Amino acid sequence: MGFLRATLAIALKDLRIERRSREVLNVAFSFALVVLLLFSFTFDPSGEETRAMSGGLLWLVFSFAGTLALNRSFARETANQCLDALVSAPVSGAAVFLGKALANALLLLALELACLPVFGIFYNVRWSVSFGWLLLVMALGTWGFTVVGTVFSALTVNVALREIMLPLLVFPITVPALMASVQLTTVLFTGEPIAAEMVWLRLLFGFDLIFTLLGLALVEYVLVG
Image (cartoon, rainbow, N blue to C red; front, top):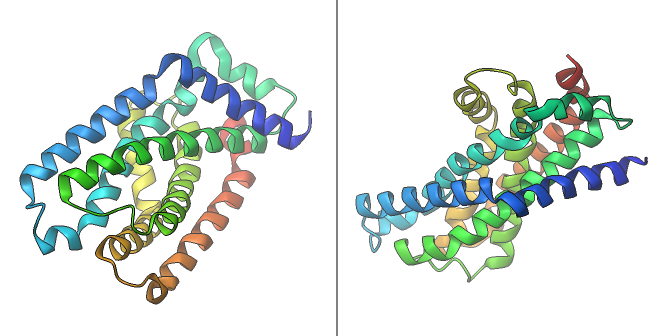
């Protein structure tokens, strides 16, 4: 089986499982709504300070909800020794990693897009004005968060406290990507020109490229051990 075909097959498998069970999206979306609601009581939606920190609030919700989704990426494979079968299949570990990362990224993007209208209502943010740029930032930020999270999801799949270990491992490494995403999102929400913040966009591109290549190179050792 070719690399691309194997990658797409694994991604489609995970997406079909999620479409049938809805266990990740339902839990993560409910969690995101609760956090957004709690934050709306804490901060004044009409205040300028809230708008200035709107990007940080949004990505805080995305990252916390994202860890819930990433935690299930390899955990669902532990039933009936499915993970052993996946590792033993005639496909490379890189294809397994990339397929799962692609499925995770698409699920997280769907979650984020569902949260945007709620965020706009709660915090009086016009997120649709520069939606093209916002979608690009969300896609790049989500991919950077996802590739790191997918590797550590595989690493912690057999750890008893993986729900705690995963965010402890993922958040410190993804700080540069989250910082860039927060800065760019805040600029878009406040209506400032994004041209002055291109250094953050380049940082996001570089982070995604570096950690995608690292994931492809190291996942074989993570899976086989």
